[in-house]
Structures are given as structure tokens and as C-alpha cells.
Length: 163
Image (tube, rainbow, N blue to C red; front, side, top):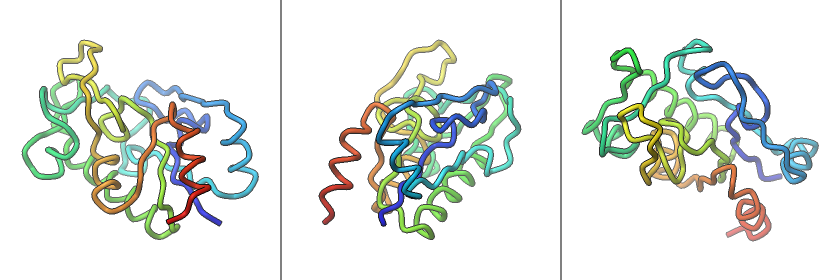
């Protein structure tokens, strides 16, 4: 049975930077959970970040692919460089996906880790920038197709149409 790596916050775990979750109530997620398809993971917590923690953003104008290539860093609101633990979280996510046989991931959009279609601008101003976070980038670079929480229907179609 095809397994899916899923951001733990989407499943109701209070692991986001502010100690909240981002629970998505969807009949497909409920079904996949009952079927044992879900592999939950918060890459940031797996990398050792506490909850809560200061929000973090990728440097302005840059994205997760830039972080992986060493061209960008991630800073939290206090100014601390948190690039290394974010990269570690991405590596843990990739290792987890590969070891569990996950060809797909359902990730939290907007996160500097899990953003699949957007991340925040790097100015801590609430402005979104098109692009992906570090985890989404690393998974994509290694053949794992990533979807945001707004793309559950597209994920279901992908699951129904194996290669």
C-alpha cells in the first residue's frame, strides 16, 4: 500500500512555531489514516527545534532550493541563523520518506520547511513569495512529489494513477 509523508501539524499535532496545529479535516485524510498510509513528521521538531519557537523565514528573494545549494540562509525573528537545523530537518524528512517508500508528501504551505507553492518573503511582514521551502525542495529533487494541504484531491488522483 502506497504511503504518504504528511506534515504532522496537518494531522492535528501542535508542532508549529507558535505551538498550534494546522488540522485539515478531510475525508481522504481520514481514510488514508485508517488504511495506515500516513507517515506523520514535523521536520523542524525532528531536527530538535522546540515548540513553540520564534518564526523563521528564508532570506528575502530566495527559496528552499537556494538554501540547499548554499546560496541562502534561514533566520528566525530574533536574527539567529537556523539554516543548519532546517537542513537537518529536510534530510530527516527525505530519509523518512525513502525508508517508508513514500512517493508522495502532503506538506504545510507557507513554511520555510514544508512550503510547496509559497513561503514567506523573509521580511517577517506576512507577504508570501511563490516557491518552495527546504523540505519540499529536497523531496522534489529526490523524486518525491509534494502537494500542499489545498491539493489533497490532486494527491488522491496521483495515488490512483501509479507510474
